[in-house]
Amino acid sequence: MTTPLFLEIDNTPRDYAWGLVDGVAHVRGTAPTGRKEAELWLGAHPAAPSRVVGDAPWQTLDEWERETGEALPFLLKVLCAAEPLSLQAHPSTAQAKEGFDRENTLGIPLDAPHRNYRDPHAKPEMIVALHDGFEALCGFRPAADVQTDLQTLAELIDAAPDAAAALQTWQRHLAGADGIRSAFLWLLSGDESLPALVAAVTTVAERDPRFALLARIAEAHPADPGILGALMLQHITLRAGEALWLPAGNIHAYLRGSGIELMGPSDNVMRGGLTGKHIDTVELDRVLDAREGGDARLVPEVVSDGIRVFRPAGRGTPDDPGFELYAVASDGEIALDGAAIALVTDGEFELASGDERIPMPRGRAVLISRAASVQITGAGRLFIAVG
Image (cartoon, rainbow, N blue to C red; front, top):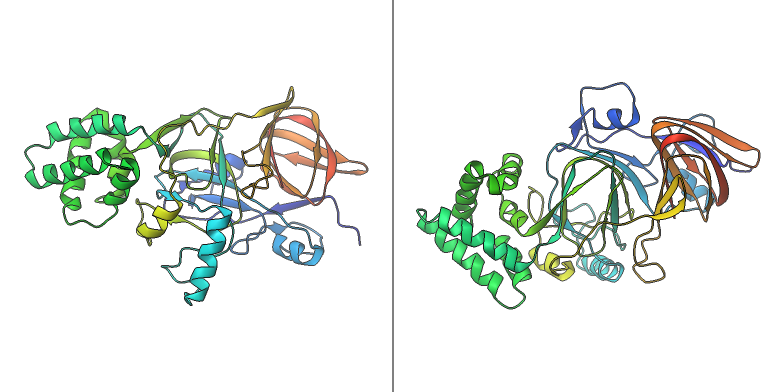
């Protein structure tokens, strides 16, 4: 039996606590549910594989992978955040393989809460903002800029001696060798002076607009040392259609907004605050990229008047992410090198190749099951992820 080229797929939104009420429904133009909708997964990830809609030999995309021998080297998501996610970084391919083998040798169960490596794969990510105002923390600020803010805080919390002493420790770490790394990891060390410092900085942030972002983060994660860590990170606000690229080692957290996320289908996460989950500072230190500054925005390449493609760095290297994301606004044609997933978030399109075609109203997602030259007609916003 020949696999149809176009297979409609769907999934159930995931209701994480940080999700936006009716977030996925709003993106897809479907009926509101009144529930938090944080993510919609489109792919074959075994934790929540997409369902195949209608008459097909497979019920889910993980079944399709097993029975056809095809593979999707990515997971496409609709992400809708009302509150900050955890600070996190992900390993490179080599780090993931070594860590996975090491924890297997130690006999740590795959589902253990303290397990760091649940598979031997990297987890590179990109996200494209769907609306103006998508906010994220991404990568470290220059140490000199952080020191300036710490000096301002020192003047404002002088009346709290325990907090002032802790702040001086933070400043000393930042001024030392490998200061960014040392200072950030100290914030996660569990030092007994940190709770007083977190409380004092939160109090300052609640009344001083210069630190309003920290106050907003503290509302969602009260007393968490990640509030202090956020001060060390670049605060980036995207306009609709702008993207971030988050390679191995990049420390980041999405703060609020809706976007289309494309990532490696891995569960390897090293957390660095703003979470109640396991934090392993030793393993975070191994994977952390502590370089200062830089711009995480990913500029798309122009394919045609109505088509752009986001191509991450790393092609042809051991850390090749194995995916790219097309953003389509109008008619055109794309030659796909492998299986792909398409999703419409605005307007209406049609996809066609040879004798096969499928209408794409707003909200519809489809698997394009193999390499093909696909003709696109319509207008709006269509995303196509391909490996």
